[in-house]
Each structure stands twice: as structure tokens, then as C-alpha cells.
Image (cartoon, rainbow, N blue to C red; front, side, top):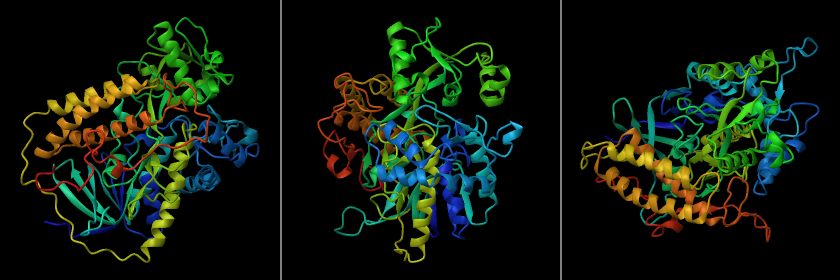
Length: 557
């Protein structure tokens, strides 16, 4: 049966970007449906430790925050976008406070009502407002409570979006409008057809395409892949940020050690105690993440060690337990006491700086389709994201996208098109799942080996060859069997992996997070350029268009 219920606004993703947008629209009396792959807060935002960057101190300024962002972005930030987002920071922090988020304050009696601000790598001032060392959890759980209480917000948990539904009028290409999404109900195994006047992709990044990552299992690039298949451009996917410090332990697969540990005096050293950061950058441990991650990678390979150490034990135990209560307890769980000795750390894939190309209202190339948060590319981050600018971008783009959608809803006349139901008449249950699990493992391993912190053209070409082989296997599997969560995610991961490799091959220089031994210097012969990919330009190239085209029905090929 075709869908009979249209939503005014459908938000795909329930991290900070998605939930804050839902609340802003709901507070204007607009009905919103939120699609959550797992629980309402189960995304990368929940695990953010450091905080949110904003120029809040009298010693700080918008100009300083803007310049720090531009410096970290290595010549590729869109200055107009940086200025817009930075200047909206304080009012968005105030909005969070009004929602009930409790940020950390000074314990000094002389500053009892002042918020405590951390300093992180790349920042010239203390400007990171936080809730101890679990800011994401504090923000997400507070906003979740507000969302669940709102009569204007409907939450569909345990639903994964499969593809965007487009209008395709005879003789008109590309599609003229987004009309909704197909979504797999993970409890029933059925695919729903969900119509909407406006669809917002807030699905987060794609770091699960790598073997080692700080991200939760939900970070599979769903929004980026869906937008690409719908004809939207993507930009700068080669810039994958590797967080310098994740706990090195076989059971701690996503335990990130906050940048704030280094910001508060933590030192990096080899296992024998030799400190090394000053030899790589004059800012030492406070250098931007790309520099610190490359330095750690270099020292590990040079000395043949499996990890380096991060040591803040020279601070008092009281200081450490006060500033890092959650990290302290988590490390203790794995056998490490931060107050007594160094903890072993390694870099891990952390943040996708590229994404779906949007404007500062979150609008994509497809009318009616928006993208915000980590799944979007606004031009804020450039070639390397400045620490704690990610949650800031989520808040500001949710605010601007919400205002744009609310304005359009007053005048919007729904197309009134009947949406085709998902067709499973020519597919069967999968005969074996090993194809999916094996290909998932292979993809993440060769992305880590060939498209990691240090790259070469040969490694990238090897990765692309492996992607071509996997595409044929997964395309055949996807076309003939009923879909599952793992298959949908693998299909999306393969798409974003190819986009990452294609962007990396296009950039014949080293800049920011993209470092290649074949072109170790930045190209200074002209102004820096973004890597923008357009789906129509890849039809017939590179062994196919990443399954770009109509959403599958019938035999779903």
C-alpha cells in the first residue's frame, strides 16, 4: 500500500543537530518526525567529551575564534561561513542553557557564577564550554527529555533510512524535489514509505568505514550516501580527521581520550618516556589534531611501537578527578589510573570533514532536502576541523535550517504525488550473511591500511580496485535479497569509502588532514580548491555511478 500520511518535516538522525532542529521547529508549533537508527540519543554527539567552542570570555573575541578556525582549516575554510557560525555561537549556548543543560562552573568562590572554559589544540584562548568531560551526554540527555515531552515531536526509534524518495516527472532530470524516504523498521524487518514536505539528513559521519574509530557503530555515512544517490554533490571527503588519542586496549574500541587532557597539560611520549611533540610543532601538544595525529603515526612507525603514552599524572589526583571524572573511571575500568601513570593511546578515525554540499541554511542541491551536522559540508572546517567546532556547527545549522524551513512551510504547497510502496515481490530471504560480514571487515581493513593518516597514490588506487570488486558483490546481493540493517550500512559505507578515495586521488598535494607521500607539500601555485564531486559526472566512470539512480523497486537493481 502506498503511504497515506505525510509529515511536515522528517528529520533523519537523532544526534545534536537533529534533536536541536526538532526542538526549534516544535517550539514554533510545527509537527516533526524524528527517525532514529537506534535510541533517540545513540549517535556520536552522545560521546563528545570536550565541549562546544564559542567566544564567551571577555579575553576572547569573534575575530580570534574565526582566525583559529581559518588557521586550522589550512586555506580551505569558507570565511563567510566561518564568520556566520562563530558569531552565532554565544546565542546558541544560551539556548542550550535555557533548555536546561548544566555546564561546568568554577569552584573558586570568587567566580561562583562563571562557567569554566577549557582550552584545546588549535585554540588561542580558553573558549570550550563543557559539562565536565561528558558534554555530549549532558546535552543529548537534556534535549532528549525535552523532545520526548513535546507534543509536536514524533520519534520513530529503531528505523534506518534506506533511500531518499524523489519526484521524477517525465522528461525532467534530475529529480525536481525530495518527497520523503524509505525506512527499514528494524523490529519488524519491513520497509516503510514515509512522505514529508521537507526531509533533513542529520545522520552524522562515516568513520565506521575505518578499522579503528572513536565513533559508535551508527556512524556509517548514511545521509552522505543517500544524498549522493539522489543527485546531490559532495565535497572534500578526503579530509578524514583522525583523533590523536584513543585508548589502546583490545576491549576499548571507541574510548576517546579528550583533547582537553592535552589542553590541561597532558604530555605525549614514547613508551620509554621520551617526549616528541616539540620536535614536530612549536605548539607541541596544543597543535591542531592533524599535526598531532601525524606526529604520533610517524613516531609509532619510526620506533616500531604499538602505541604512545599520554601522561597527566604530574597534576594532582584531585585536579584529574575533578576535571575528568568520567575518563578517570573509564580508564580505571580498563586497568589504567590517570592519577598515577601514563595511559597508552593511538590515533583513530574520528570526524568526516567533508559531506553533502549545502549552504548556510542546510539546503542541498535537491529542493526539499536538507543536510546538517557532520553529514553536511558547509565550508566551516576546511581541510581540518578545529576542536569543538563540530557541536557548534550542529547548533547553528539547526537554527538556520529551522528558520528556513519554517519560513517555507507557511507558503509550501505539497506536490500531492502518490508515493510508490517498497516492492519486495522479486526478492528472497538471504541465503547466507557471511557475504555482508566478510565484506564489511575487508572494507574497514583496507581503508585503514590504504586511506589512513599517510597516503600514496598507489595505496589509493589499490583501495579503489578493492572497492570496485566489493561493489559488484554488494550490488548483486542488494538487488536479490531482502535488506537488513547490516546490508544497508555496508552499502552506504562502500559509497562513502569510494567518495573518500576519489576525492583523495583528485587532490595532488598535502593539505590539512590529507597527507600523501607522493605530493608532500601544499600546492601554492594558486588558491586552494575544494574537491567537489557531482554524481552525473561519474555515470559510466570508475566502474559505475555508485548505484546512483532511481530508488529500487521491482527487482531493485
